[in-house]
Length: 234
Image (cartoon, rainbow, N blue to C red):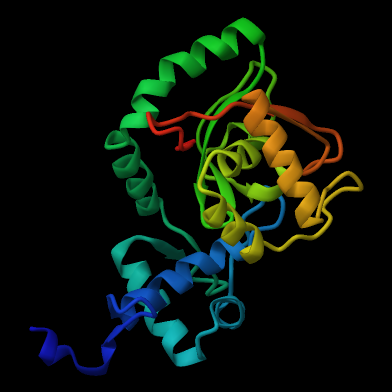
């Protein structure tokens, strides 16, 4: 029962039940995302996991070894460093087979990629980021443009802009307020009034073109996927 678990069970800031040990387990897994450089996934030692997860050494070791036992991390017996385990792919598969929007969008994305000979994506909002849930690459696409799951800041990307433009203003304002509004390229807008004007223009046009705001040599176009009430879901 919950009463048997003791201090491991608490409430989060919204008053929802929260199991601290589960949260710490995911802090360890998220450390590997934070430790990623470019497209190369670094193996992490225990000290690095501690730094990136915010856990002390004892806790980081317990959770890391538990994840190794479960198959979600792998450990090199020589270097004693950890890397993501193949069992993690189960989460993506479970998400995708139950994701109705992706099922509907997939044939449309494939056709668009063929017609326009370009990479086509389905993006959704996750916190302050736009996350690529489906990616249909063109024939000459680089490895990085083939990978679903990549996160990019919503405020300076085409998909993020159209999603924010078509959601309640107070919610969009909250996303901008929580975002790290730093310049990624020389063209990146970081001024909130300018960003809100850009969102208003995207809402008026029904699409947005991001010209080198998130990548120095990249221009991308996005249009929102809207619910019946006009709110963007992707």
